[in-house]
Image 1 (cartoon, one colour):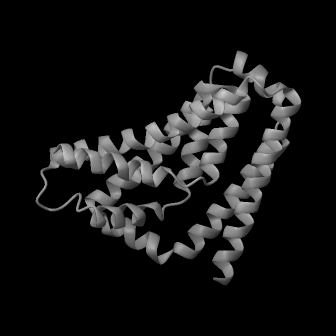
Image 2: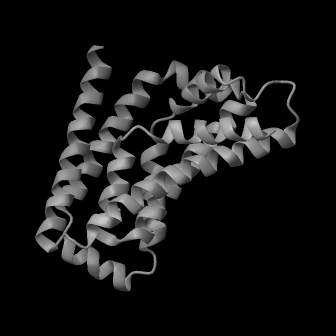
Length: 207
């Protein structure tokens, strides 16, 4: 059982490790708003991956078939969402962000929802889970339901530990950045979002 938990932990970290739009968002939120907002962003991404892990574990053929049959449109839709999210971040005012951190009690929830929405636009993650389950010989038919539940929780823990590492790493530089630096962070993150969206959009159309 311990070996299974270790494998589950690493699967959670592996799925979260690629530095895509959600990783950039986590860095941007940590640098401009602080650790709490970085954690909220990371947990939103973790929760989305957790849902897809459950789908992969249960073998929900209807959902998996829908994703497979509509892969082209899902990728295009996700690219458009990422692009407009990048535009929003590019135009964010760091002064207003700092004021929101002090006065807006709902901002943590908003960061959670933003990260969840951004991550859930990539439902192809379910196939990554299926591949990893096969390669690591995890979630087999011989496992009991409680063993699968424990493995899923271990995956969620591995994913969130990865996000915590990103938050603590980014926060170590936060004190060295002034308002102008925060604006550069926003513009850089927004630019990365838009570039990733363009690449994904045209790669989906032509490749």
